[in-house]
Length: 272
Ligand SMILES: [Zn+2]
Ligand SMILES: [Zn+2]
Image 1 (cartoon, rainbow, N blue to C red):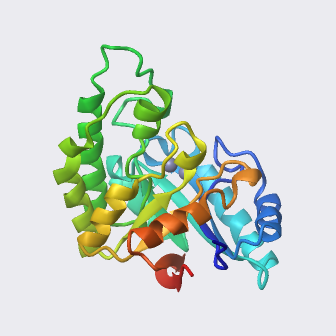
Image 2 (spheres, rainbow, N blue to C red):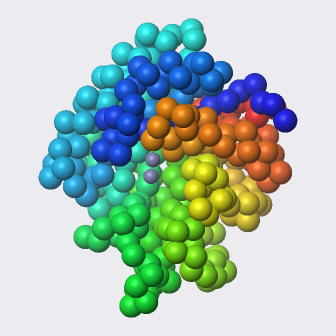
């Protein structure tokens, strides 16, 4: 199936420490690929905001994306965004940032537990790591993040599975987290926030989206309406990657619209 309204609301420029291409080059690529709208959401890891100079990259990223937004006006809708990692570990700095920067769109994520490295760097082949316990702490923080409520979409809800299951092939019984995941989803619904359908996993060893079909169906069942979609591209070639597959999955789970954000306000656009 070919979709007309391809939007990608989770991408990284070289203003992210793990990004690779300039904002302008990414816009040109997105336009060439026929993408209608894109949000640049460079990393701001709020638990290391000043230590790792995110205060500087935040400003750099904001102005480069704002410049691209006017340069591509009429060709590509560019949204100025940010991916706030671990915002709930330092709410004060996070709220100050959000009061200062007039973003279109803010993603809330958790990449690491307090004072521990990103799940990306952890070696789960080490048998002494109790990954079920880490996951349980992770979902507790995801709930706290959902309750904090100062973002627009909750990103890659099952992020650690990319590594625990995808990279290290561990067996995770997700039924153990059913209750807390319900609570997270219900909090998003109550607060009128979006859940993100992150398609990065489709091009990674795990081979599925985050969250996957079962959680998307549950979100719909509980009354979820707001869904954003993003490739989590860190390279120009990944812009829009998996969005069509994501749309098919969203339709299958009962969502016929996808949310787009400008000025922190969602607009629902039809998937088909
Ligand atoms: Zn992320
Ligand atoms: Zn990201």
